[in-house]
Length: 404
Ligand SMILES: Cc1ncc(COP(=O)(O)O)c(C=O)c1O
Image 1 (spheres, rainbow, N blue to C red):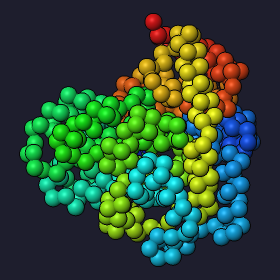
Image 2: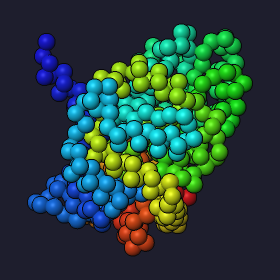
Image 3: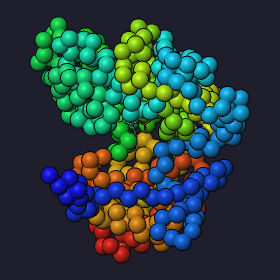
Image 4: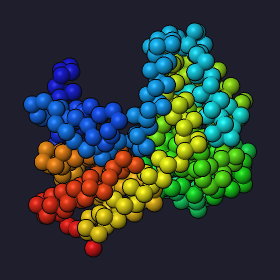
């Protein structure tokens, strides 16, 4: 067996398809985001503007967040020192879970080391406890939900993206007495569309199903207190479990679920991905606490971000660029080819100092490769103008078809 040869062939396949991933080496400039320094392909750092960060509201650099983390570091040191059960249950963790439960109007919350782990651990564990459970999953659900569903060992049914009628058909076809769970996201982060949450909850009521909503790309950003689309649409109380990340709009790291106390107790007690791992550093948790508390009472960041996204979409449309019909803060520009998407991204970075990562399969379906821009409250008009002018020049240079 020639192991090296097999691994080399696997990597070669990625190169051939144009979707070998190159990580761009950067340092963000604290207090000056989206300005950063890039170490990629140059002798020494070069100034760039970041257009693809999921720190949507720049909370990772907010003075309150940074100060809270500094204070925690000096007060209790760097790490938690254990799992939640064995020495790693700090007072910061307890406070943050109370804050997150309150954010979503639920009895309890549970923090994980990432959003990925929270999805995988919760979906796999909860449904394993329900013999014969059938999971109904949106076809565009995130890889972490798919991993959890797979690891649950349950039967699954995939419904067409955001398709209420298809979900109804699939639910109606099953034994009315079988336990059921419907798993979906609120904001789909590659297209920027939103699930019909209330209609899915109606179906859950009708067919006696549990609901699991991933609000990773919405928490902090939608709703009067940052409780996500479920807060904005006043449906949080209808959902069994709301899941979110602490690493995107909240700007730090970690993931969580919010639900009834019984469900929190079950996941806390049975999920290996929660139990057998060191808890998040109290320094990180202190930063998240400051961020969640700030965004509960400040809408300035949310409003600034929505305004920037609307403006950039309009500028791209006016310039004839193929911006996709997103109804959210996500600004995706369709390219439809992995090699071209990478080429545009390379030119933007090397010649214009604009950093946007190309998005390829399997993150999006083949043939829909794209550039995904996430303008935030600190991207100003001049930055947007420079970006759109650069894109128009590159589109012309590479003879890419413009939108009608
Ligand atoms: C929809 C969705 N869910 C979950 C995750 C995982 O969250 P995290 O980055 O906190 O692991 C992501 C992440 O990137 C995501 O897009």
